[in-house]
Image (cartoon, rainbow, N blue to C red; front, side, top):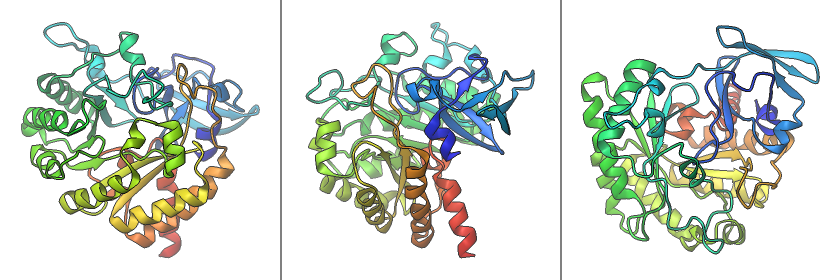
Amino acid sequence: MTELQASGLRLEDPNAGAAARRGGAGPTDHKAVTVGGRTVMVPVHSDRATHSPYIARAPDARGHSVLERNGLTVARIEFPRQPRFYGLQTLDGVPYSKIAQLHGRDVLATTVLQTCIRYGRRSTSCQFCAIGESLKGGRTINRKTPEQLGEVARAALLLDGVKHMVMTTGTPNFTDRGAQLLCESAFGVKAAVAHHGGLPIQGQCEPPDDARWFARMKDAGIDALGMHLEAVTPEVRARIMPGKASVGIDEYLRAFADAVAVFGRGQVSTYILAGLGDSDEAILAMCETLIGLGVYPFVVPFVPVGGTPLADHPTPDAARMRGLLAPLGRMLVDGGLRSADIKAGCGKCGACSSLSAYENDARELAA
């Protein structure tokens, strides 16, 4: 899985399974692939993917395919089918797929606000971000209302059996930084699914300026929280995400501690993108600090997105990711954090990284 995510995947049938996402937030330009019972997000539109040694042959009617590496069959894989809720639309004609998307096999994901105060200016924009691309291409709408999100979440739960939901947002201001939008959105979803078994939600935003927002988000129905560092050293953050770097690492660490006090150990997480310029030693040192705070560090390989300033930036190879994820898996076991215990979100899904496989290996060795 590590090598497949690092190398990307060529598709004999580009229409295999559910459509790959182009542009936007999250694992964009990827396709969900199930390998050995585990669903992973694999780059299919990156430059490296076009030269990948891996190719997926055209799937059969059940979505099953053969994965080849340099012409040799290495696995049987499966492409998750297009979700049924994608065929529906709101009363005012907005397709459900423009409101929320299926990530992996059973995770519903949405960007509640598809614009960001930092986006679009080189002096402030995160250079890897493509949040505006899907909006520009007409594949989504800017502001998803709580009512729309609740309607789509209910349909995805009943028709496609989604297990949890991720709500991220562009940063709307320099104060609550999206926390209020997440509160309103989570409340709408929880009300809509209350009589259908419920749906755990992870909210994702930058650290709000007031720690009281953490309790407000939890009270609104957010079960887990993601606040994403992306890079772990000040110099890399200033170069790659000049606007977001104004919220310093010390401020993130204080926010992590405050959030863990509300949501609990392991229910707060952060995305770290390997390959942006941080050394492996710096990433692992930050992960050790985060685990000590009770924060789950979700380390994923950086994959460039077309149309961004980092479109030609290299992806870390499989050997480097193994060198990072194997010791991190042991650190997570020693720190008592488990991806399986996260109530909702990216760390629980795990499709954008093979980290949980290394975590499970470390746990088996420890036993």
